[in-house]
Amino acid sequence: MGKTTPLMAEPWVSPQQAMARAQRLAEADSPAALQVVGAIARAFREARAAGVEAAAIERDVGSRIAGSLRSIGAGMEDQRGGARRSPSESVRKTILDRLRRLREGAKKVALKRAEAFIANPVSLKQLVALVKKHRPSYMTAEQFQTLDTWTFRAFNPGSFMLNGEVFVVVRLCNFTSCAMQYHVPDHIVSIPVLVGLESGRMAVVDVATPNFHTSRGLEDAKCLLFKDALHMFCTYIDYTGQPRMCVVHTPVNALLDSLGRAAGVHDFDAHVLQAPSMRLRPVEKNWMPLEAGGRMYVIYTLEPCVVLAVDPTTWSCALTSNRSSGVATWELIRGTSNVVDYGQDKLCLGHYRNEDDFQYYHVFVRLSSDPFKMRVMQLSYMFKFLRRDRIEFANGLVVLPNGDVQVSFGMEDCSCSLMRISKERLNAMFDDEVDGVVHLSEE
Image 1 (cartoon, rainbow, N blue to C red):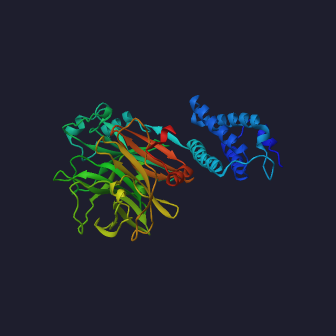
Image 2: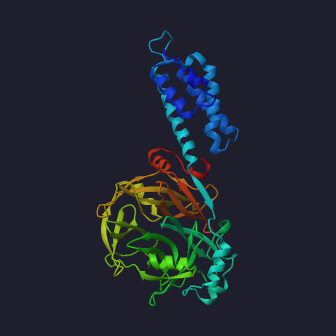
Image 3: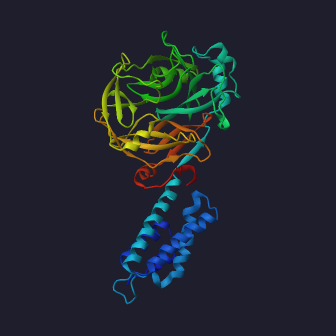
């Protein structure tokens, strides 16, 4: 029989090491397995009860496990035909089931350390000062008079990566719901402002197209880099007062030149997105842009997955695909973010809004990559970024060079935040079965 003295002698044993050891003992029908599983579970409970921070919990748990293993002593021997009585099959299954649950808990603890949360990455004071200096052409005098840090808030940021730097496009707006109470001014306006998160370079988004008119500015920009140009798919209010979709775009080189000169404002071309073959809804918003095979598309709805091809010369949209995944409840998920490449698939964020209490819940959505056969393949478990906010809107999604993803989202139509999620955690969100809603910031 092989002794496990080195493992028991360690002052710190990782949960993963202990679980692997318990797995081998259970498979060898050793009664010591139940003691080891109990030691692991007890260590997790004690660490959480003591309020150990997430970043330190694995080592704290490891120290507690090591102490328990030393007390178990001889019971940590491998049982290969020994005289000791083996546990019953039902007990053995219970051990393995507890190990599985503990392993999932340990995995979430380890993955938590790879996440980062940034609240309010941009300065509201700087944004307001910039717009005061560079008033966009679509902003009326009445709207401009309301511009201050008391009335306006920055929220619902889109995002994209350019030359290794992540940029957000925040919505500076005076129609807000801070403290869960809407402030509805007489002259509503939404102004997109680009902000480089590392360089701090900023530019107000202005519109240079003569025949494009919007009375309330541009809302919730979803970003797509396509053929050396930045395209932002935005909601605007048309002449009938209805929300419609438009795209504002500019060559990347021209944008970098404006940012490099600290111009403070940049002119975009703007076009209304048309879908002549479709009967549009009274309210059109949240079309999700993507690139596939060198062409531009938008996802109109997720379930059924309706995909429109966008002609960048006429800005007319034609139906490309309309495929259902056959899961009726998925029809409740609405589009939220831009769409990015993720391995062989496409990835985006969707949301579900509970009409009873107006709570927003999120899911990651994995899609097949062929726009002519695109359908939803898998949803992650449902989650919120934070517990305190009723409204969260994840408008931007960026894949970082190391494979992690960064989500930019607004809270309560009042502020904005970023959360980086490790690729391991993201994959686990599709694999784990979870009852209820997970709050990512509290695990």
